[in-house]
Structures are given as structure tokens and as C-alpha cells.
Length: 175
Image (cartoon, rainbow, N blue to C red):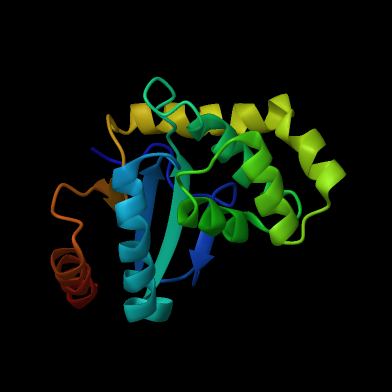
């Protein structure tokens, strides 16, 4: 399956925009498997440096992870204040505590304007962004989290550090 839609300026992109490898993760902030993948992605980013750009798209599985949707909206709300990745990281680093009160504390810790953040948490526009990510995942063949796409193609291999790094390094040699 291929990524639908392709990565655009509307996505949250971390790393070199012109990188040789594009890694997209559809993830759920409350998913334990995504929590396991979080440090692996960080390791890959460190190892590959400017050869990798990383994109995270929201895919909250609300039926089994009741706090995932609000956590995704919180990350989008932080984005409005230029702190998307800071919120993304603090949420994954505190994945067991994603109630609204926790998210407000994380917003305070990363230096957000709290009244603005609280207003944005209720924004239907931000809920729509999360839903658009989810729908794009469905169109792209995502049925669980995390699901990775490498250079626009669904990745079906292991995302354990050694195997994933070997695959990405082989992609670099082809590029």
C-alpha cells in the first residue's frame, strides 16, 4: 500500500525536509507498541541524522485507548504555539498519564500559554485535523499502530532497532 495523501507542508516534519529517506509513522499516543517504537525512532533519527525526515500522523484507536484522541488534539494544540514535537515527546514519555489534567501539566512544563492551550484543546478544527490523519491512515491501509511508511510505501518488516536500521541503510544505498 502507498501513503495517501503523500507528505506535504501540512504534516509535522522533523529533520531535514530534503532527506534521502522519508519515514512516516501512524501512531496512537496511548498504544504500548507505539510507546515501544518511540525510542527506536529516536535512535534511527540520531543514527541517520540529516538523511532522515520523520513525520508523525495521528491514528488514535479510541475504542481501546480512550485518552489517545485528546492526547493527539493536545499535540496539535501545542503545534499552534510552535511546540508540536515537544508535546509529542512529553506525551510519549508519560504515556500512562494522559488525562486532561496531565496534558495541561505537560503544556505548562514545555512553556505553552495555558489559557490558549485550554481553548485550543476544545477546538473542532484540531479535532478535524486528528480525524483527517486517521482517515488518511485508513486510505493508506493502516489497521493498527504503529504503522510505518518508508518513502511512501507501507513497511511490513520488523521495527526493532537493528532490523529497521538495516532496512533504512539499505534504502540509502539504493538512493
